[in-house]
Length: 336
Image (cartoon, rainbow, N blue to C red; front, side):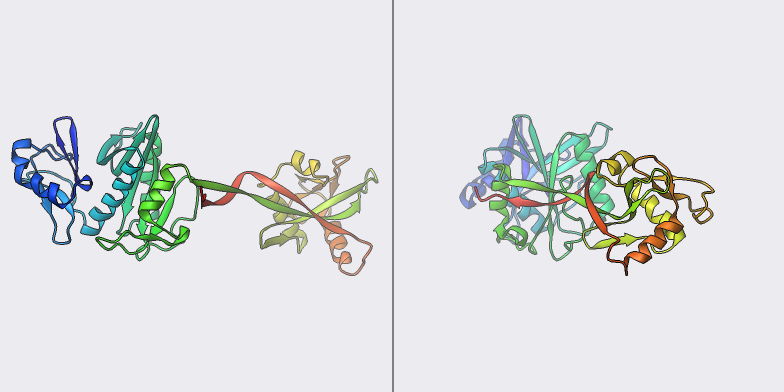
C-alpha cells in the first residue's frame, strides 16, 4: 500500500501529515483528484487500525501491486521521513528501469544532486540470490541501495558485511515504535539521517596471506633460497604433508599469488615440471629456484621439512602477502 499519491505533478506524502491535516485531506481528497503511483487510478487516503496513513485504490481494477503489511508501511514512513528531514528529495514507491530494461520499484527513493539512493524494507523471507539480483538491478540503474531487514526473520550470516550490498538488521518492527539497529546501537531514523549526512563508512581490511618457507640451498646454482611449502590466512593454514600433497598445496598457492610476486617476497617461484624425478606422477607442481629457476623436487622438500622438526639449524619462516581484490571489512558509523 503506497504512502504516496500524485496530484498532477505534485507528490502527496502521507508521512508528512499529522492527525489533523490528514483528517482534512480525507475529507477533501475527491476535489484534489489524487492518483495512485502504481497504476494512475483514483487514490483514497485512509488510516489503518494501527494508525498508519496510506493511500488505497478507490476501485482496484487490474492493478498488480502487492499488498504490504502494516509494519512495512510504518517502517517505510520512518525511513522516508528521516531522509526528508536530512534535506533529500524523497519519493516512496518510486519506479525505475535498469540499463538492461528491468523494471523496479523502490520502497524509498532519495535523490540529491547527482546522488541516487534507494532504501528497501525487507520484513519477509527472501532468498540471498533474490536480494543480490535486485541489488544488481539497482547498480545497473546507477542507484545505490541499502536494505533494512527484520532481525526476527534474517540472521547475521544471511549476507556477510560487504560494500556492494549494505544490509542492516533492525529489531522486530512494531507500528509506532522507531526500531533499533543493534549493530550501531542507534534507532533507525537517526541511522538514516547520519547515513545520508555521510557518517557511514566502509572500513576495508585486505586479506593478508602467510607464505610459509624453509631456508635451503639450490642443488643447481648452490645459492641460498627459500622453499615454499605452505600458506595460511587468519586461523586457516595448509602445509605440505606428503610428496603428492606438496604439489596440490603449491598449485593452490599459484591461485592467490603469481611468481613475480613470490620472487619479490624473496622466496622461490612455483612451476609445473612434468615427469620430474622426485615428484609424484601426475603431481607436477614444485618450487623453482629464485636465482636460476631450476626445479626443486618435492621428495627432497619433504625430507628437508621433516628434518626441520628435529634440527634447530634448519630455519623456517613466513612472509605476508596482500592479495589484490581480496578483502573483508565492516561498516563504521562515525561519531561526527
